[in-house]
Image (cartoon, rainbow, N blue to C red; front, side, top):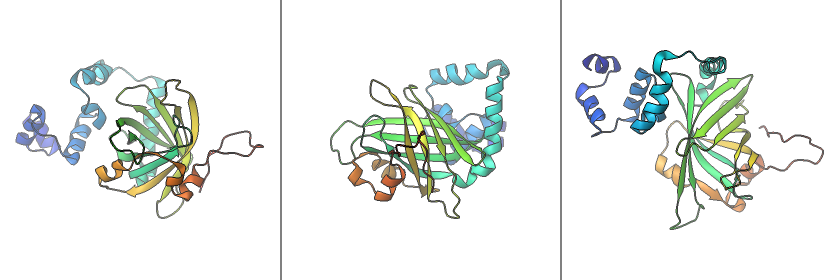
Length: 250
């Protein structure tokens, strides 16, 4: 234990408190622990039974990866340098897949991990001006890969494990990062779970944020409540002569 703590650079007494559950690690120390043991932050926060089944069992015996997994890991690792400028927090805007005509705003963090670039999306399903209504929270964990000047994002819903979403974004060609535009595909949150595609905008918030403040403003919005420039960027209409549904670039 002493050697492990020394290698991580974490005080042994403090680490024992983490193990006992008396104290939760700071974000910096949690990142050190995850990097040292080769796990993602969302994995180490899993309930014990889920961690045993999904993480330990998957790595038992160091079974070789199949060709797809091996190649994806390689692409993800290779993408890290080109994606580091996009690290930080974003508000994501798109027309809701489950509530037609309304705009959904969620909170996203892109961060670095031992394997490459990862991200977490936090959703708060409630009307923006609602008071006293039940709030549904969702959390998605995913990875980012940069291929031929396009940013590919893929994630899964971590609480219920009932959905995978995919997003493709244009990179930003401006010196100052403000917005990222693209399209995403997923399923409606309603019972019919209809697959759908929608245009999306990532609004850059910065390297660090007041999480509670920024998450509190997430949820469903009426069109008139959202800035006109954002509405124009995520407008899902297309010309009658367009055979495909295309992303709108900057």
